[in-house]
Every structure is written in C-alpha cells, then in structure tokens.
Image 1: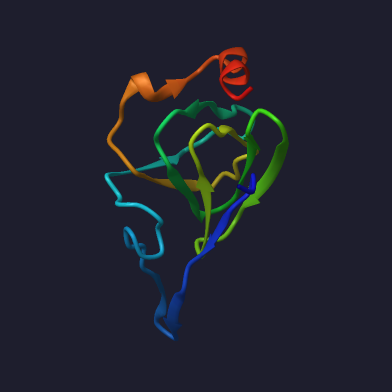
Image 2 (image 1 turned 90 degrees about the vertical axis):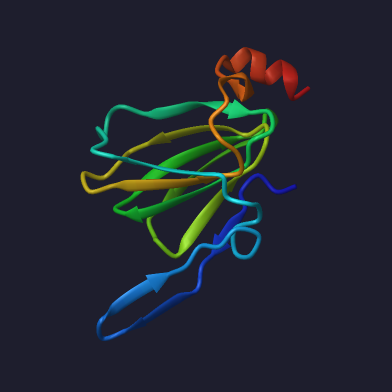
Length: 132
C-alpha cells in the first residue's frame, strides 16, 4: 500500500459555479459515518498527532491550503492539500500531522465510523511499536 493515496473528485461546473459530490462507496472508498471540518486554524499551531487502528478517513481542503505529514512507521512524506477536487486517503495505522494552515483554510474530513477514543493512538512511540 502506497503511503500517499490521492482521490480525484469530478468537478461539475459552468458560469454559475462548481459542484463536487462526495458519495460513500463510490468516490469515497467506504460508507461515510461521520463528517467534520476544521476552520479558524492558527498557521503556527499544528494539529493531529495521532493514528487510528481501524478508522479510515479522507481529508479534503475545501478552502485554502494546509500541509499533512503522513507516516506509516517506516516512511514519512508531507503533502499539500490545496484543492476541493482532491482528497487524501488517511488509512489505518497512518500517523498524521496537519500544519501550515492558510488563514482561509477549511479542512473537511470524511470518516468511516463515529468518534471512538479507543481507536486513537496518540503516543508516537506506541505507534512505532505497533507498526513493527
């Protein structure tokens, strides 16, 4: 499995504007159980710093831009999210850290399940142990 997996969304538009439809088990590779978004973010205050044991997510920067560090315990890569027509798949056991938020950044996340604190790995050393 590749560390970085992009999903390109079809954009429908004309002189009135643009539309992107996100559909579970179609252009999103799972049944969507939760949607949340982050906004009003401070450029110098990173977020995330965790991985999930079972949850799968797709992150979409629907406005502005931000960087996401992806880490599978063996390799790391930072990518820029800056398009509402592109989603980043955050798979199970992928440590992720979001940073460098533009002032107008709105980061939406589609999740495969409801919030469950027990699914989170919040200690990086524990994460590395579990990815050996």
